Amino acid sequence: MSRVYVGMSGGVDSSVTAALLIDQGHDVTGVYMKNWTRDLPGMKCPWADDLADAKRVAVQLGIPFKVYDFQTEYKQSVVDYMVREYEAGRTPNPDIMCNQEVKFKLFLDAALADGADMIATGHYAKTSEGKLYQAVDMVKDQTYFLYRVTQDALSKTLFPLGELEKSSVREIAAEKGLATAAKKDSQGICFVGSVGIKEFLSQFVKTSPGEIIEKESGSVVGHHEGAIYYTIGQRHGLNVGGGLPYYVVAKKMDANKVFVSRNINHDSMWRETVELDNLHWIADEPAKDAILHARFRHRGVLKPVIRDGNILKLNDPERSVAAGQSAVLYVASECVGGGIVAS
Image (tube, rainbow, N blue to C red; front, side, top):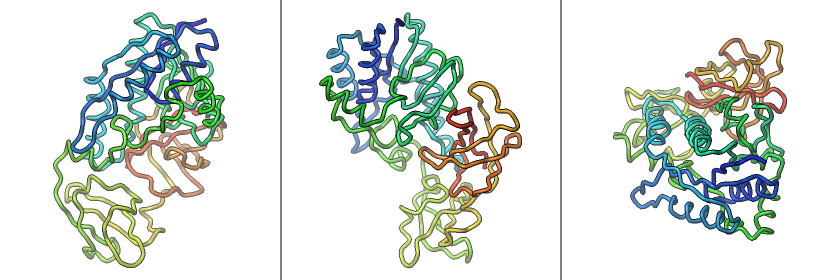
């Protein structure tokens, strides 16, 4: 069997991943990726607890355990990228960039250089011959976050959880008595735990108050703490009271203005065509007659699309598509790639 380095985050999914690979006869080494350790005011980064949990499970399983320090590279390729995108008025997905640049590039390269034949993670996805497929558990499926991983990287990757329901993963962890069996899944930004995006960004960017303007009338209906904090379709956090709810329909970053409407059917809220930048195909580009479906957010509904170059045409309009988000494309159960929403 192969020598497999498992990315162990200190959660139940990666813990069970390591246990299953041992059961399958692989020579398993656990690796904790030390990506982010910075505390924020009033919010403690959970990295030390996660590291301790990962190490505890490795001891339980009787496998070697290593720590890879990627903090410098992570700051440059994931955190700085995210901040730049928000400053430009876009809505990036740091989890996608983390997978592209860290887990399936830095981690993979370091593991192979250290003697591994393969790597494995606790993602809910399936891979075969370097192609990517949706997991059995469609609620937990994480192919949306993996669409920018290369075919070469996937050919050296194992996803043991791809055939399992989340409930089964919990049961396996309990049966094996793993220390993380009852640990809650992490929420919020991938690298700082439960902290919200507003609290995180406020540590890196300077913002100033601005006007919230009703799109139809041009009237000022409220004020915000910085246009950077708002995204298209947002309803909560506007602090504009009275009557029907307002939705963010546009932003002007240079003027620091946020535009809102009570009309949920406002043209700015719905897209029939979406232009993509930075298209990435995992394997071959889909044939022109391929039946494509697109997903615009994790757990979003798969919608049929017609692709003309980097333009997606939807018969069923999609709501709240923001520049910087990813549109991920599927042919049946295969995730074939996707791109970044241009504007």
